[in-house]
Image 1 (tube, one colour):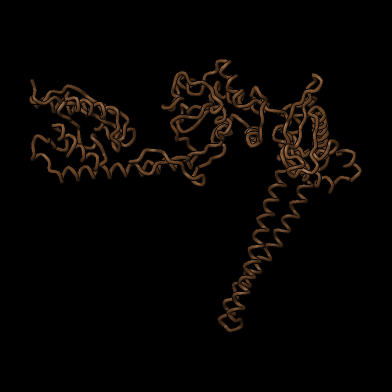
Image 2 (tube, helix red, strand yellow):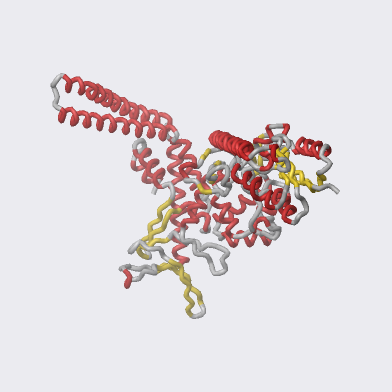
Length: 544
């Protein structure tokens, strides 16, 4: 029986090592087998392979299995192609070579480095240490290059993650691009629709589980798609949860935006991820096809910010939850239910009360408030439609061109003032040298002209933005007016309409409520445009 029971240890990383054909698992195996064939005192009893593992860390699965065999006395010899296969952290590599392996009586052989601890002349400690340092330095250099390459890809808008978010998959023709996964994207759209309609995250999760819809992890496993491992989500029993739904509702990826670089590691030896500051995230608009419109995504975020009290069963959000404001103290109004003579009454009130500073608390029945708000929405939608019709009736292109000509004239005036201030500021130093100005006068005049230059530049920038706004006014108007016009046939109030159209409702009394609609700035801007080109009498008849 041979004296040494050997294990052939083979390793190949997932990045740099694959660039060298000589480092392939096949070549490592053949080299070790040829070596053992010429050494009758060694018997190869096992082989351990870590394919796709960095040499920087030593918690590799196959390496740990080999160490278990060593501790159990099953093997007393380890053979590798070269020292870099054992590891690329010179401190840890030296610790195994100089302390751990000798403590267990293990013979270590590195074929290409001509190191055999059975032969003291085959490699001194200094030579081994230098080689380990070189391997460590190589690993650091590769890490720097990899980080740079990943950064460049992120800035180009390439996807560099391993596991695409639920709803997307990697494009088979371009692994750095996301494409929509039709089935799971449909589930995502359904989640957003239900949330906007008033369903809570828990209700959505329960409904998905009831319908037998696979959770994100289970779905990816069933389709053999890349998926993260570890944690509860890795369990086959994992189902939809309110947290899983919330994550989908908060992920901007679904709008076509790619945000990467949220995590990093301290260096190539510490693999524990750490969060990066938002200012260092790499954000790219329109990086891939959107599943959810920006309007619906922003609407869902707005819903999440509200005090969305749900019904006792947790299935839906109350109609006005988070939107009602007391006109007396500015506090949020809450919903209450009262039963009298076996009849149930639902009303909203200010919980602050007179004792705590609300001098005129109001109670408003829910059915009456619903009728008022519905009438207010219907009237506002009609006004928006009328504004849109009137804007179409006038020569908007000519109107915009007139506005642009006026704005460009203002830009030209500011540019003249700025050039004049620049000339005066430039001549100040010469006047100082010639004795025409004192130092105090020089500083005062320089600051004065610098302020004029800055003011003129800011004015020019503002005017240029205004030109861009006017140029795009038709397209922008189409967006926000359509947002209201989609509810033109609304006859019954629902949570989707309330959230989509209203910012807040201030209740001052039972006869005085103020509805603050969305796109208020755009609405007023459209009215201003019309008042300049349409008689007031026509405006009054068209827009209430």
